[in-house]
Amino acid sequence: MKAHKKEDEMFRFAEYSAEAAERVGYSNYSYWRSVFRNFLKKKSAVVMSVIFILIVVFSFVATAIGRYDYAELKSSMLEAFTSPNGEYWFGTDNLGRDYWCQVWYAAQVSIKLALLVAVGECVVGIIIGCIWGYVRQADRILTEIYNIIGNVPTIIYMTLIALMVGQSFLIMAVSLIAFGWLGMARNVRNLVMMYRDREYNLASRCLGTPIWRVLVKNIFPYLISMIILRLALSIPSTIATETTLSYLGLGLDVNTPSLGLLLRNARSFFLQYPYLLVCPAVIVSLITITFYLVGNAFSDAADPRNHV
Amino acid sequence: MAKYTVKRLLQSVLTVLIIVTVVFLLLRMLPTDYYFTEEELIKLSEEEKQDRLMAAGLTDPILVQLGRFYGELVRLDLGTSSRVQAGLEVTEIMTSRFAVSMKMGLISMGVSLVIGIAMGIIQTLHKDKFFDHLGTVYIIFVNAVPALVSYSLILVFGTRIFKLPSLYSTNDVARTSVLPIVCLSIGSIAYYALWTRRYMVDELNKDYIRLARIKGMSSKDIMVKHVLKNAFVPLIAYVPASLLLTIGGSLLVERFFSIPGMGPLLTDAIGRYDASVVQGCVIVYAGLGIIGVFLGDIMMMIFDPRIKLTGRGETR
Image (cartoon, rainbow over all chains, first blue to last red):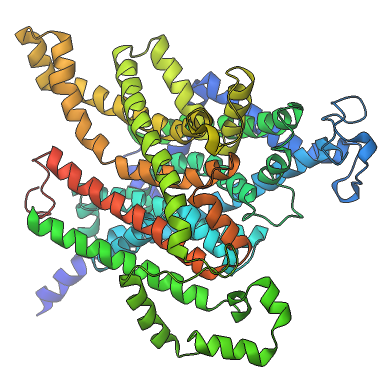
């Protein structure tokens, strides 16, 4: 009896301790340090990220340094279609209102919406994706939901929401997240399934590592690269969806200037007055293209397989 | 194969049914005022409105209405429009518009399939050289820049340089359709080019290609007989996705060029709260998407006998 008890005591699960782990196999490898080192090696990506940050910061400064405030814009037919000059830096629109503050305000709205949606998609997508990949019973029902939602263009759902619920910044953000998490969750699920039953994870689980630590420490690093790539795609695509919906009159409400709304108003005029198209188009394209490229480069740098 | 096809078909029908039901229930939650034209709304008294609703069966319990709706759906009766074109049958309004959208969508899908795959092949052949980089720039541009901005650019260049008309007109269908088709195609072209290139490059690195080279097969033969054939299979799987892209794009393109297709009908109907027209349009769009994904799966199976979707897990 006594000997049996002793055996029980002899095999206890050791608590995780960073110190003990280091003593066994010390390595000064740090995941994030390697990510940044790899990223900084790519000069073009660094330049792109500097441009991106500058534009985003400037979009908030620009409305402040402009001569006109968006809330106090007055239309005056006398000054309609003034080409860009010292007074109106981006000219004026068809109602003679300053275009500079409209464009930058719209850019701000787009950036805010895109960031909010990207983060929301990420959080919801990762959580559901991990459950989807790890819990076998959930696989079937989530796959069905994915099929139902994924087989119909998102824009159809968005139009329905605009009809049923209404149009505002918040409604749009929530509904974009509600349909956007699918792609992220699907990718996370596939990767989690791929890495879930690798030998080192089986070993980890046999040794009593809690599931969350297996997920966070063993599986998550493989997901980061994909997640960042998704983020990089999500921001341009959110901005695109917003412009499309606003152009169709189903996006943000009419009092929030957004890129879609600006281009919608300019549609009949920009063939004669190209600056009405060029100014917003250049700014928004710079934002989306730089972010897209930076995201791609960062995603490459975040792949642990590229670190060795 | 037959068993899988039937199973998959039933699944698709079920999906359509679920979406149709949800749309129906959602639209019934709207205030009943929207079943009248704007004129009637002012003229009619409350009682008259109630009588009308009773007569149309809109005050029945929701399940009875749903049952009746299924019955009408089977007979392809989508009700009558109350606002967009008051009094006309929804099916009647949609058929002519659907033909316009369908023609344009199919042409653009064909164009993008041919140009996209050709572009991917050219990129692979000139890997890491000028044409490859040029193609990559195009793909990045299309993916990153919002569709509305690129459409506007196409519009400006198309009208200024090629002197093409900027709005669709039924008098000159051929010339006025050029720009909309270009706009509809640019997204799918980038899509096909990206994946063609990726699959072909993957395929080129495989051992059997090396063997074929050693055997002395000409590189043209390798490309056509091995690489392209194998890379084509996964590409087929992207046809449905491209269909969804085209549907989504058509909403914007048709409004942008004032094409009398399905897109403007849907947005008009939403703007004026015409429930039965919205319902009809959503059913058509959802049905198209689901049929597209279904056909894509079946096509992939026909093109690649190795894919057995019936016995998942056993074959691996």
